[in-house]
Length: 129
Image 1: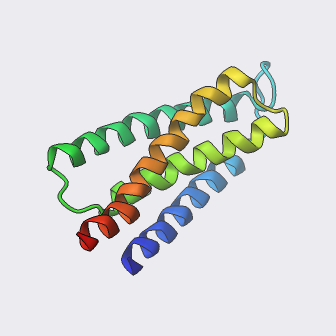
Image 2: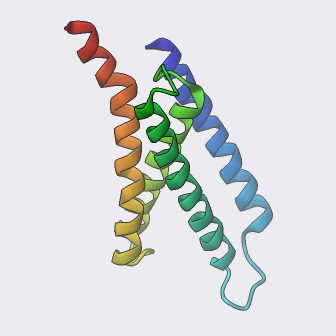
């Protein structure tokens, strides 16, 4: 359990460093499409990478190729998907994101919650039986 929390901390640090790097070097965009265009493209790229990698790692977990749920990559992808879902929630509440795009990002939040349920809750349920 403590190791999982440490991995979440490492994941949050990596996500924060990646976000800082992107914002520092990309924002504001010099594109004619707007100053936020490049950030939006990078966000969508990271969203799809997180979604497909998360689906792939859940499939590997279900097939038994990944035996333990305390794998750092597994936890990183769960954390990434939850962060993307929370970011979309914040952008939607601040009227910075359309409802259709918000619905697409909620899939990431759902995927991250499934991974975290596997990491934290299923281990507790299995150990009690």
